[in-house]
Length: 403
Image 1 (cartoon, helix red, strand yellow):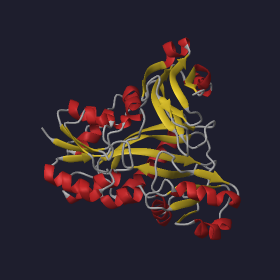
Image 2 (cartoon, helix red, strand yellow):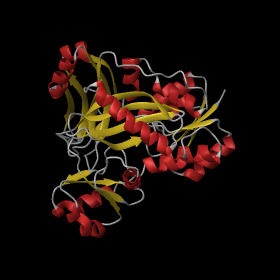
Image 3 (cartoon, rainbow, N blue to C red):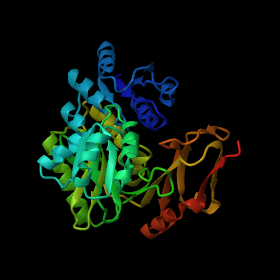
Image 4 (cartoon, one colour):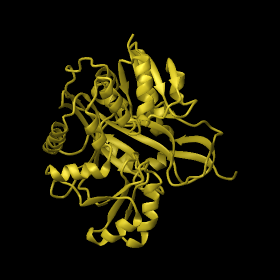
């Protein structure tokens, strides 16, 4: 039985913990919080921050682990690569992972290597950014250099908002640094999705159409992703080639990837981010429904140095979507979901709630509260686009805000 150290035990990381046990491995879990959902499924649990490289290294050495995984989160990605490299375990190069999880350094790398990149610069303070603000074409994005999940991100078109949005970004940055970059107008859907590299080659990719919230306080939360990506194969290949060039330059090895990509009106490919990990939410599960490929299993196999050479590209069969249930506008008692009977019967494959009826939802602040995920299926692309466009009519979150 191989020992696998897993970093993070949130609800969204439970599928990876369960899969590791299903594959017959001994699972050791680290999370700074106690009583996390993943603790119920691990063989051992340690209350250690997943971002504390030295403490995690000490634990991994003491327990003589065979592999380390940080599934679906950037918070421990650097730690996983650092510890694996120090212990000569399978991993992507630590320097590459560090670069990919640092937005301003990644932009510098892209610029130096001839990738399409928006004008961007990193700062530590509002005063620094204010001096350079008028050198940027508006609107600009303000982002923490080291956050994920759209936390701390804003778009502004006036210097009057700069100080407020810089403070907001810094609240979500552990290193207290942010990036200012010009906004890229997208032609067609924003591109998300999952991929997998084996010995540095992008052998599998499954791009998605990302849709962001428009009626929440944070308009950059990805609340829906749908498959397949609705552009012709020529565009798929163009994106593939840019990703492969990046992987080669970074000397990436064998691991999962999560994409965040835009294409402008001239079909220039902009790699916004590539996370050296699986995506969050239901992405991996939907990819398995749509292609038969179990990316979680391959991630675990890769972390243990097992052969992944049998992984091959598979096309998406059918039309699928991931709908993220979030609360960002109300506080009060959660009273469940109101799903139209026809929609539930025709399109809902499965869903999971992370809160229970009767739970109190705290007042939204600067982020959002994740209530659950839903996997949907459709018969045609037209049906998928139509139903996703009116989904708020078919799925409603019931909150009693009279408390």
